[in-house]
Image (tube, rainbow, N blue to C red; front, side, top):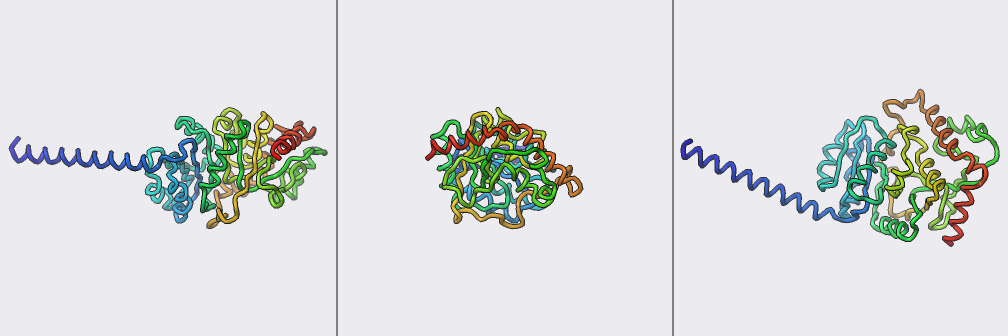
Length: 316
């Protein structure tokens, strides 16, 4: 090798060393920047919201959130390229999935959260913009610290459980299922309560999103069952399951000036690869009946209602 070639080789080696050093330095700086809320895994699910993703994720990265997963589910827009710039932390993950949808993604994310030593998961969608998440995040952690049986906190809306007379046919009136399956599938046993609820109250179930859950409970009690995939009525199932096993569900509504809801066109779309307009109604009806069947006796005999009433008497 000539002297010129040797010098050229040395120069290339030095350049590689410098480049690697700069990369390592940037990684260290990124890790240092994102070191808050290490006990929490923030889980976003998105479908073709590349034009909004910065406004949706930035409130959490600005806090220095250490652990974030973004599912870009069946995205064919700029979501992935935009997210790459927004999530540089070593525990920031961007997962491109193909119509896996909510339930499977949350279940997988909880397992990842365990490997990251996270105690809690914040379940988020892509249609809400949170202006000041720090306040309700800290408040949620305080609630978990003060109540070891608390398993789920909801900050969107909630419903109470009441004793239920009647049979399955009364619970699933076809007209209501067709018109509003997500709102009315258990109207006979649930009563909308969000508009007149106290600031913090134990409830039958809380709607997503956001929800803050204990990851250990989600895994141990199967909060995201395969039977309900790809999506639908899993919010209700996980909350009823929590009460059934002796855990609690708390409603802690967001202040109206800290969230902009339905930012853009809405959240995850209703239809996925295996679920389209032809079987949408049947799928939700199937899920509703399956969920109710799991807890039929406890709803009928008032056991769940008693648990919630007892928890609220202690709370007051």
